Image (tube, rainbow, N blue to C red; front, side, top):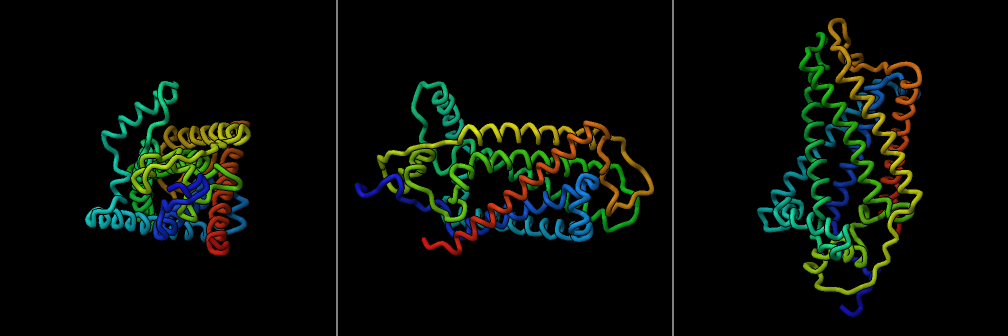
Amino acid sequence: MSTLTSESTIQRFNASQVYVHGLLAASILLLWVTGLPITFHESFNWLIGLVGYGNIVLLHVASGVVLILTGLFYGVYGFLGWVQGQNSLKNVLPGPSDITEAIEHLKYLAGRRGQPASGKYTFLQKAEIWIIIFETTVMILTGVVLYAGTLGNASPAPAFLITRDIHAIVAVTMLVGVTFHLFMTHAKEWPLDRSMFTGKVTLGQASEEWKGWVETSVGYVDVAFEDEGHSTALTTSLILGMIVFGVVWVGVILEYVLSPVPTGGLNVAQDVAPHALPGGIIGTIYTIGLNVAMLVIFAAIAALIYGFYERWTVAE
């Protein structure tokens, strides 16, 4: 143990977990890239003109299929790991210890104790994982219903339109949450934290964030860790970004939930979603916000490509 330093690495994810996580991330990001122009035509005429509406719909459906398959993989993977006595599922299941950890973390924030020793995932990370599981489940179920509804030419029933509302609202809400996740989890070093792609973390970072997991995995270690944290510029950007996404989210609520239910004469495949945002300054803000959200998604896709490019080309 004396040879271990803060820069020593510890395996956090195996290759299967790295690639399936990447596939899951890619499918969700592509669903947003295609879902936004499907929902808000006028705000994304530039993208529709560049790619073609039919191609956008086709890519949306294909990405949805990939999301379903990766979700099934995670379910089977977790179940088989549980049957074989592995901790893959146990590590993310919430329990009484998470309540204790949350209380201890509040004491830590108040300066009354040191940082609690978390397992492989902190109580906040577990909460985030299960929120994403819930949101993707709702997205899949409502998406399947919407896809089935587009196969017919009849005017959509109110139940179908309510399903559309739920699908859109959950999608945009999830976008806000995942943006926060990307910042807190991956924007820790320039240009991004690589543990998602390498499957490894430094012993210093692991000892700081998941001390209980480190002690279980490699035993007690005492290494210095310089936590650079997030810069003021990044934190400010996050706050501004969350405000923008909050505006967009409110816009979706207003556009969907408070809009009259359309009846009759609709082409379900293209016109079921109300795509005309309010005019004037409010409509301009919504349009700008939606396009900023699209830029963030493109940046996340670029980071995903960059990370896997490094994994495949840079020697360990």
